Length: 353
Image (cartoon, rainbow, N blue to C red):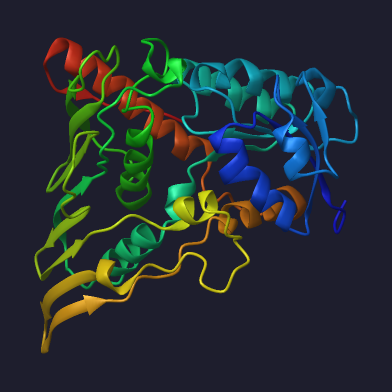
């Protein structure tokens, strides 16, 4: 199979399928985007005339040539569709969130393992320019031992979302499963599984049925991790505020890749993933005889890195950049955060994997 393009099908052509999956798959030489399942519109046919548009995902699953299927549908359908993909004998990429419950993630992992299939969870924001830079600063030891890690993932969207499924209470609804998934996964990437979570979920916009703000406190013994989000931040503050025993790093701005893609730019463009200088982070550190206070140029964001790893795992049996077990930790934290908010107490994170 080495060297053969990965015949791929995409289920769903909303924002996720249109912006985060189809453009990258179509650009990469290692993939052949053969199908897009779109229930009503034919917009995918206009964007990718060489790709077959189908109304039902079953048309994709019944094609024996398809090796990989991307599930880019509303959150509450991820588990059932991913299960069907795996039982059809195909590798799967699941758009975040992995699945609403830890029990469902366990079931999907067991099916994949039993059938020698690869399961990927699309935590693409590990390849954001800002997070790659934060990760480099922390892992490079520039701050010494980290004692406080605080992240704000805020937006200003006071009006209710016209997509009713995003505003209807149900499995995997609300901002915790939406924006929260990203910054929880980033914390897991840096620090692993926390001991416990203390959570407050908020309903701040007029008429909302779902949580649209949150405040999470993750316990890592000597390290305190605080993750926050709101849709009512008209004036954005710093996104990352990180304190170490030897220094501080503060970073503002949002990775440009999503906005660039929505503006019609290609991931192959020269300046793809580059943040503007005004959003570079500020580092103030003192280690041994080295003192520094100034800006740190952001690394280039690169969502294509996710897909490169998908190819390497499928074709070369390489390690996952994001293992299913790592993605499970994020689900466990979210489930525990919901329990914490409901019970108004700190909740221990269950063991995963």
